[in-house]
Length: 453
Image (cartoon, rainbow, N blue to C red):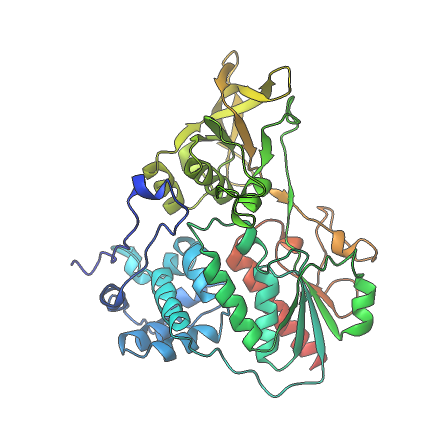
């Protein structure tokens, strides 16, 4: 094999995987992992580490892998990340660590994410113990939300010896990792194992406890020395067009939650998604891609409709490629203007308009505008809006925490306007990636340790 080319990861065949919810990518075996690890140049100045939001010591863990010491390799990763089996699957490495890899200048960058996944999967398979926590401190920390920000913050604090309790509103831990990312991209067994690893560190998780209703933030402040808010961004956005109240119009949140958390794709599901013929998902991000690929697996003729061109698609390139292979139809430079319904208010189609790209805007993206007299009709049974999310501030509704002009929780070095109450992730930045939420949780843990140590 040319040393400039990365070791390809095996996948399920497209026409098989688009009918099941099993993991698409099969991961490296030992030989493939070693082949890829041997491509690492072990640079004296590892730019890849700079590109990792949680600063995993990448050359070090790869070196241990090459030497056959999987346990040591995992320990190195765990020093920086408590959710490495998850990150190895869903982080956009191509825009972060791998984008900085020297190998990428003249060929393919080292497949850092695939190697992280291999090491982590081997560690979970062999029940390697996680990093031992330090001597227990007489300090109690509450974490609100068990998504990537909350789990990361909890893991770092537990390793530092603090007594950590997570409060989760739903009946399973994991937040977006559990309800938002499909099984075919992130098996829930992996999330459960990572959560179990945190429990071994002493982290307590209280499920079915919606903070703000079951217990207030002020009540938690009376009981705990510090609090971290990692409630994410869970309120779906819609377009505000005519017909959005029709039966058959969903948010991506609802579709993915029902599929991932409630297993609505199973025949005996209590909350099944009705089966139709044609589905359109509106949007171009990873959530849109997850939704349309899920609907394909439910038997729909699944379309992705996005108002810009393929070059502007914000979804990961790999997810776009997988979607195409699986038979997803892309309707680009197209946008809905009206949902069409029958007399019973069921979706029967959409009126859509063709779009054209203009000059680059202040955000670096090209502006887009409708083409006059290009309106036309497309038939469908279901429409899914995957247009982003807003913050759910239910947890802080009885507090006087300050918000920004955008409605986000305002922080200074992760601390909110309330002393010893910290926040991070989507609740602070708006909807972002799993790894950036982890980075926020890690930073907050560091600030908490400085303040109350």
